[in-house]
Length: 640
Image 1 (spheres, rainbow, N blue to C red):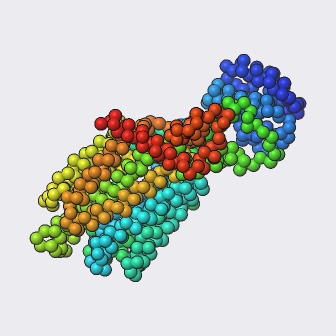
Image 2: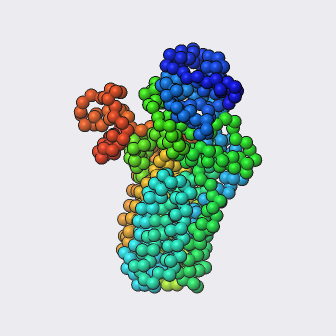
Image 3: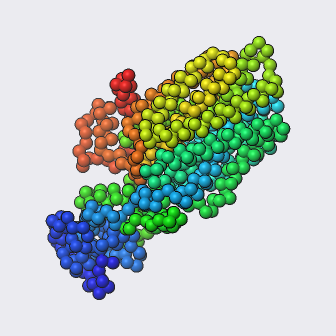
């Protein structure tokens, strides 16, 4: 501590006048680097708690940050609002004068770098990505096999794929909320259990109805994919985040190629049940190593569990052979709240009870989210435009990617069904396995292009360019082409969509603050699953009905629209650090509402309602969407 034990015994109560006098001295001497040097002498420093360690600085009326319970000031009456304000001033000046004494999770990760620990995290998260890729790729093999085995109609065959995406639609949002409220570890533990159990039971399904129900449950489990990607992202230093997220995406490619290889050998001999069983094994591996998986330190900091976050960061530094920065670990949200507390001039410094637990500390740090639903925060003025644009991009990516996977087999089968012979043979099925295997390798060049362009061109330009190139490669397929040319065009289109899908899963978590990151990505991914639900109706239904031109033109429209929406994003995230908090609704939001409704003039600051009262309005998201559509129309006009 900044004072000796003998000095601690001489502490005296400080009244308002003493507090104001020393506060004036603090302002006058604001250039000093150490908080202890800006107090009026050693005794004043002792009385005020002006320590050289922010960990021991009180934060208003006995509310302290990081003090052990025995050292906590138990009598809030000994601290007047003025002296509490001084404590906040000391913390603020300390932050301004000597930033090296506090650091955030981003600072810690930048210091320890990407090392052995991140490689272990990459391997674990990558296994989850392989599992999801295999479960999705098998749909292009199981559907045609079940159509022959159970004599299914084209609609029933499409349902096998659609129910998986319906489950993912539910799971992506649900697991995102679970992960934001209860932690990333709990989120992907439940998803892995659901996926592995339902996947294995699918192989034993006795009839079509049971299979549909079980595949829907698999989809619910697969909806937790964004939780794993967000968890991995929160361990990556900002300077190398883009590159390593591309490497993480390579596990999806490994999963697709591996599934195509397994299907090529298993399906002709063992059948579709064994393919379902083998495909559920990777998700089971996640459960084996769950006990050693750490929680995200960024999430722990946000929840006020700084000591737990520090232990994890110390483990990261030890495994990587590095040291953490000197000072005290704080969250971005905590710094922001301390600054706001200083600006409020003691407005929130109300008498507190004598009990101050870690739960109360978590409530202080999480103040910016209190009484504001996580989903509503996605429609805040800062996030409304990127959220809605991201939904369109996710929808276009999922629709086109999974549509291309299905088109690889369906265009070949459709050519046979709509041709003069109108029949299929064992040889044609062999060609389908080969085509899927070949086009799966298109994801490797897609990943290479992503890694090369994501930081050089940026997220936005990389995605928009590849969306428009995909339209060019698909255009000749509006009419039937020779099999070799069809495979080549699908190969090139798959490269483009793999690139955009890789980049959007890096771009999406960077848009949102930690408080809503997995929810934001999860909801966007859920909207993408709607595209996955619809694409079988186009890629399977229209092709089987000999409407290839209409199917391809619909793909063209959706992909082109996605490229335009990427261009309309209001900012580029390349090189930006992740944030921990977002600004809650204020009087500015209400002014926007009143402007849209042509009501009274804007409110004065004293009339500003609380964030909870504004966000609880059922019309608030609708009004923001209307405002966004006006801005979007203007942006489209200026773009073209």
